[in-house]
Picture 1 (cartoon, rainbow, N blue to C red):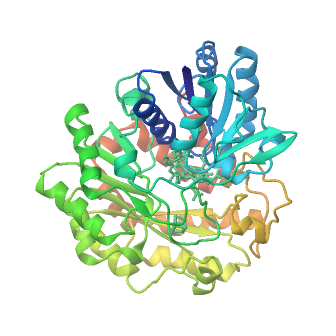
Picture 2 (cartoon, helix red, strand yellow):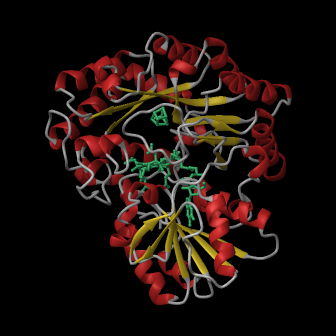
Length: 477
Ligand code: B12
Ligand code: SF4
């Protein structure tokens, strides 16, 4: 079958970061393993490719699979209309976080044939098999949302237990061996900076056992992980075959299993891989220990993000995050002492949060030895406990809402006041010569002279003067 997979992402939004589309690369790799020789697969990414080019390329597709988050929901419906017009015969399948979030209302928003909820590989394989055999009825496939009179969900499927055995490497070649790669290399990625232009993203574990009420549940509440050997095999493969040295890890809780983390580092060190590692999606500080941070540094870690979110114990409880604070400052200091750029992730605007609590978090960041701090506004996503409790399941999700468009308030401050505090944090945290010097010392020269550095500066300025939207001018299309 001719299968085209597209990451749908509106290019000119206030978030300039772009990452390789791992979700659809995993699907492509899986289809190749379990339907060898049967499909001609193509991958597109609307965050870096021209819309016209992508739509034109879909004319011969039998199946078009779209991947999206809630943030791109409005753009997604526009893209679907264009696809329907260009190729009315194709089957449109939707996947990605938006599906699990809007599981009961997908057909109200989108003109699709079916959708795949949660972990996608097994379900999509069965959907493709069915379509290939000429059937368009999906009720016997677990994990699918289809329409038959009303919208129906066939129920959540068991997740993949043994990731090593069942999942092949993601289909990296779609990026590494095509011109698409250049589009990623020239842009800012998820990590604050990177040493080299070329890099690849990895997702070495699925599922997170913590129960933070604002977070998705895409991959279940059980930590499932690739073995240390497999993770290092992925790194070695990319390093040896394509010469990549920079790797960003997007796992939800990469360091949940302390011994796995230690072993990954030991193997990298023993094999003398000479790579740079970045953890831009945050590590749980309470799953770190001094020796783990030291090993991570020795194995090549350049940027480590500490997902702290709030320092208010009341809110940690209310959010069911329950981060233990004892060793956070110590772990940050160990990272700093070992030459790692330490970034803190914080959120403000939590339910019932007071101005004082927000300032408490901001002051913690300012006084900490962190090099950088990313403070964002907590935006409730449908499908989470936060949304059910504080917005209400019957209220529509505001599709297309990022930090700057955030409009509803669940904290004790109105949205514009919360946004003002972002600018205040920026001034308090960054506009200090000592901090600036410390940050710059962690940057490689190649970053300071790159366009990605300009994008980072524009992103900072966007926090102070959001209406300028400077970073969106620097987004290439
Ligand atoms: C990397 C990342 C980013 C990057 C790149 C995002 C992008 N869209 O380009 C950056 C930093 C830019 C980013 C920004 C934001 N992100 Co983000 N991000 C991630 C992260 C950490 C990893 C994504 C990844 O590679 N996952 C690994 C792959 C394997 O998973 P996957 O893509 O979900 O794919 C699987 C299934 O979804 C499914 N599937 C996926 N696509 C398809 C397509 C088809 C056809 C089928 C059948 C199945 C299918 O099968 C795949 C394999 O099982 C996830 C967290 C996570 N655990 O995934 C958050 C996540 C996707 N982000 C999230 C959010 C909220 C945001 C922001 C809105 C935050 C903000 N700043 O305002 C922005 C929005 C940006 C945007 N326009 O999309 C939420 C999305 C929730 C939602 N329901 O929409 C997530 C889930 C995190 C969370 N804690 O809730 N993000
Ligand atoms: S926010 Fe992080 S720790 Fe909390 S549930 Fe989500 S992935 Fe797990």
